[in-house]
Amino acid sequence: MQEQVRRRSGQVMTIISEQFPSDVGAYIATFHVDSDVVSLNGMEVLQADAEVGRDGRVHVVIRC
Image 1: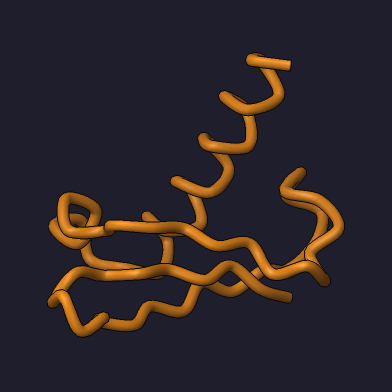
Image 2 (image 1 turned 180 degrees about the horizontal axis):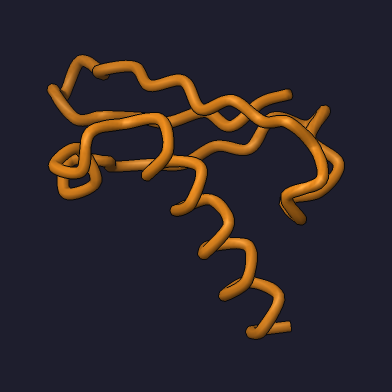
C-alpha cells in the first residue's frame, strides 16, 4: 500500500513539474485528483489546474 502511494505521489509530481514552473512546488497546499481519473500510471493524458485559494496558497486539481 505504501509503495502505491509513493508511486502515485511521484506520478503527480511529474505532472506538476511538466506543467508548472519549478518554484511553484513549494507553495502547493493541496492536491485533489478528480473522480474521473482512473489511473496515475502515465497511460492517460492528465491535466493539472491550479487555483489560488482565499488563503493565498496554491491548490492543484488533477483531471482528464
